[in-house]
Image (tube, rainbow, N blue to C red; front, side, top):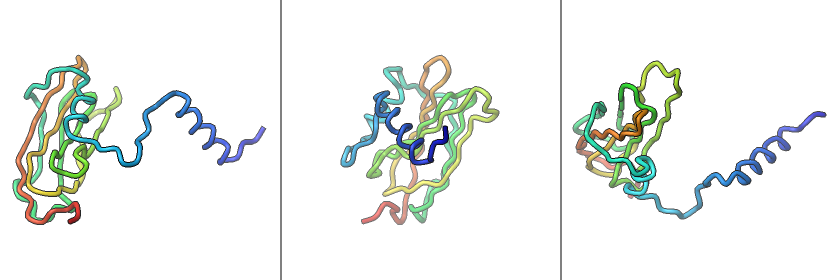
Length: 141
């Protein structure tokens, strides 16, 4: 029996809804503390071997390069608490990932302390943070 693409998409969506996976709702505010608590899942957050690289001064907040690395991490979370939507990125690594490093460009609304969290295999949460001075904000007026 042949299935059309539309039929497959509808059955996949119905499966996700049936499993009760959380779907983002419009108008739902996500703050930094909620994102951190969800990522940490009750574990203590301690300073550790997390490398957070970004410029000290970002002249253009629309495209700030950032790189996070943590040897052996299962997942990484980048938070910008003063952005309209604080969680910038979350990356999960598979067991065969050779390098536990993530780099991208992000938007920053204003000068703030950027935080990177790494979830380790034993459940420990490691933290690193850096202050960045933003000259021109990148999240609108």
